[in-house]
Image 1: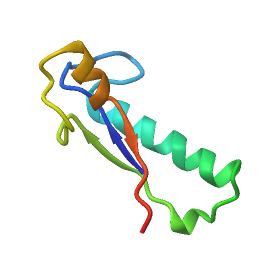
Image 2 (image 1 turned 120 degrees about the vertical axis):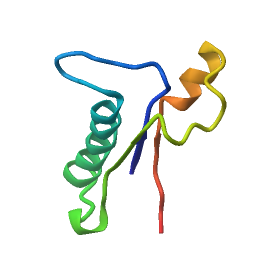
Image 3 (image 1 turned 60 degrees about the vertical axis):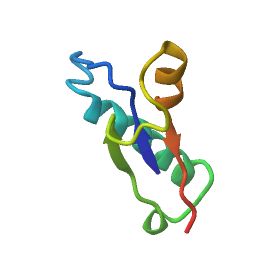
Length: 75
């Protein structure tokens, strides 16, 4: 599970940077898949990319919203 953010810097007590925010997004989905859906944790991984892999340029609010996402890779 990959967590992503837009390029707007975040700095809160909970998320000191976009890295922590993207990690939280990814780990929440991993936890859900393991605890609720019963998928073996050995088959899951969480990766945080922050703003490093945008799908579109962060040139508008619509595009920034598209870059705030998680991606599920099935291998």
